[in-house]
Image (cartoon, rainbow, N blue to C red; front, side, top):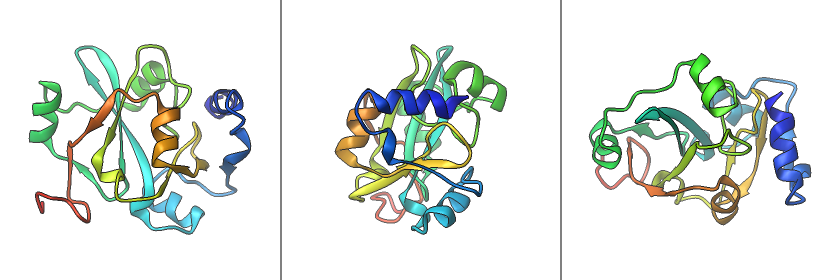
Length: 162
């Protein structure tokens, strides 16, 4: 089970005790915000894509949407999300619990600037009823991210106003 994989991952850092598990689903931004009693934009959703045959994860704020033009400028290809079956196969987590922790080898993680407006955010932890509260520096540390990207639109404070 993916949550066990994420717990083992965080155990290496003494952080497994920070993982929260809920009696209700947290599989969507809205459900996670309700379970955590926080604003939806503070949910750090992890979106899974394929770039040149490899899985790529983009962690973005709950109110952000992929900007196709910015995505293509960043990755040189059209945004193509992984199917639920592909996400589980290539990333190692099922949709609803996809997160940047304890992922399969070769998966590249990118953090979207839409997250930078928060002190802490809540990414999932490998299941559809889990989350962990992390500061932005902790998210950087534990996600193993490649770089910060600006591939989203439609969120509060977005420079392009879209």
